[in-house]
Image (cartoon, rainbow, N blue to C red; front, side, top):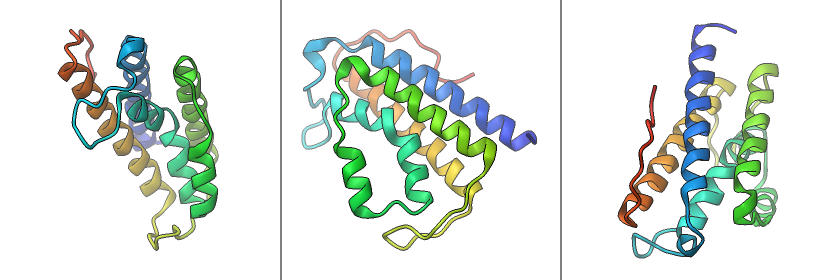
Length: 148
């Protein structure tokens, strides 16, 4: 593994660890809340976070619109979100370690495997921030270092 791969792995690991911590803070009465009207609920953001590392790389390797709709339709109960996040993280790590061939997405975007690994990391941090903001808006007192 070279320097950039080690750095990327470390940053995604931090993103996963801190996302796991945020998900574990969520109280049952808050799953359906929409702190920002018209946007995703707390639960919807948490589910998206739990699957997105895997989803992005499935898209990168040729997942079709129908296949991705089926993938996203698989229910993830709140008590299984952390396990699903770990599964998604493992999928990402496996692809990162072994490499993968990319295909043009169903909406016409082409990128390298390196580009997709970076995209997935950025995507994780984006939605982790969204969940962090949601929880703050709901009054959570979060004592968590989001970066190392």
